[in-house]
Amino acid sequence: MQNATRHDPGLQSTQPPAQPLHTAKTRLGHQACLGRLAPGRAMTLQVRQRGVLHITHGGVWATLEQAGPHVAARAGDHFLRCGQRLPLVPGEAVVLEPYLPGEPAPACFSWAPSATSWRTGVVQPLVDLRLAMGLAAQAVRRLAHGLAHQGLARAQAAVAKAATGF
Image (tube, rainbow, N blue to C red):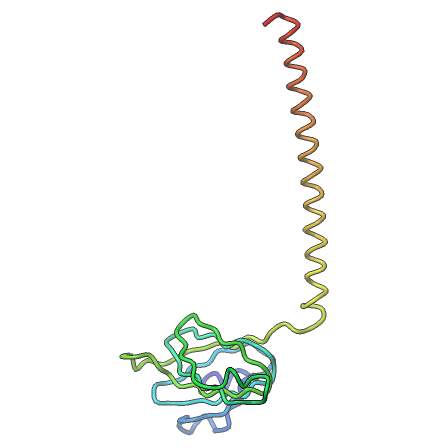
């Protein structure tokens, strides 16, 4: 985790990078970031913005501390493996430790804040929907045109066939 704390302003360790990082407190902020947790180490994450913790390598033992009545049901231990995600809300604190039975390997994770702005949460989906509806309308017009021309061509062929007696 030392490398991530030096390069990512979204992660702020409470210990200087030169010291051993047996435990560290980190704040999950507004930027997506990557973290690495060595075997035998622990890290406490303080959540400032709604987002998702994604395990990208190994496994972790995540202990959610109760942060209020809205998250009381989630407090406790969660065991996450590579590929699993844990949504987090502001005010929550989670302690991470690498954990994968039989594997003393580091755990890696990423943090992705949820899109909560008006533009990304409301305006952009409306723009996308308008574009999709426009494309659907064009497709319906082309389909109707194609069916009409195919119907006309088949009707002309039937008339020609009947006129020749075949």
